[in-house]
Length: 121
Image (cartoon, rainbow, N blue to C red):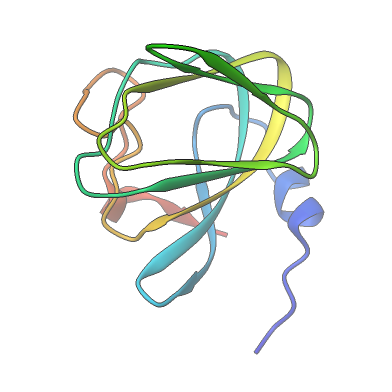
């Protein structure tokens, strides 16, 4: 039972769009990531996804609208909903997702990371 300092974890790396696992519970991973720029449109057929913003402002584009998530706020993207994260400036987030989730869901591109290949920090 260790205390995890999210800011220290975020400060330990600089790459963007590469989630790092910082904890796990009940079949879920707690991940931290830094985002900058636009991501790929994707959805997760069987998993909900929670984005908690620590720093910056995250735009979550959905087919019908865009929401802005500010520091201290979170948004849960329901399974099957197509979405695209956009960070116009550097954004730090915490993600809560099932341990089997591929970061790009059903889409595959150069930033795809399989769940088994995630770095634990």
